[in-house]
Amino acid sequence: MKRILLMLLTAAMLTPACGSNAAKDSQAKAQESTAEQSNVVHLTKAEFLTKVYNYEKNPKEWKYEGKLPAIVDFYATWCGPCKMVAPILEELAGEYKGKIVVYKIDTDKEPELSAAFGIRSIPTLLFIPAEGTPQVSQGAMPKDALKKAIDEFLLGNKK
Image 1 (cartoon, helix red, strand yellow):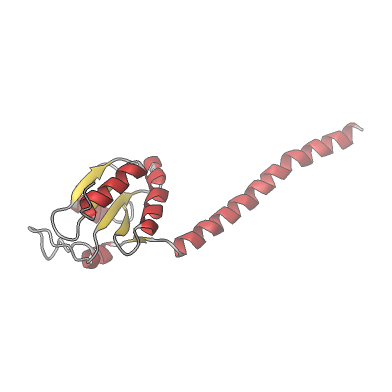
Image 2 (tube, helix red, strand yellow):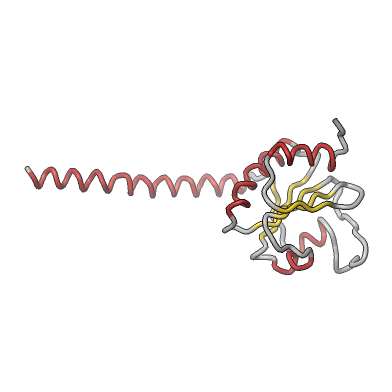
């Protein structure tokens, strides 16, 4: 009887662990699927130079290379606040699709871009209007503050 009870307890303890791995596997697949359908564009240095700002060609004056206003999120995969902002930016990129572009730059993979912009803390968000001078915001921002920045600064909709 004790053996049966011990086996049942052992089985009960192992079941959540196995289920947990299956859940992690399905979560990973869901994230991969979401990444393929993402509204956010991950940039390399070369892409940044062609889509956002070629600071090598124009080191003294800001010249935005894009057509739509943009947000550039300088982040790292290990950064807690960055992980909090990421789904909000993804959601807003979908809501404002066709009106703005949301770019992401992994500071660990693109240290030269981080250095070029003097990024010292993350997340750092660069808000780029279609015309005019960009503005920088450091730290995680709540969704309502991001929406206000998009509506008022990027799209020029004063309320």
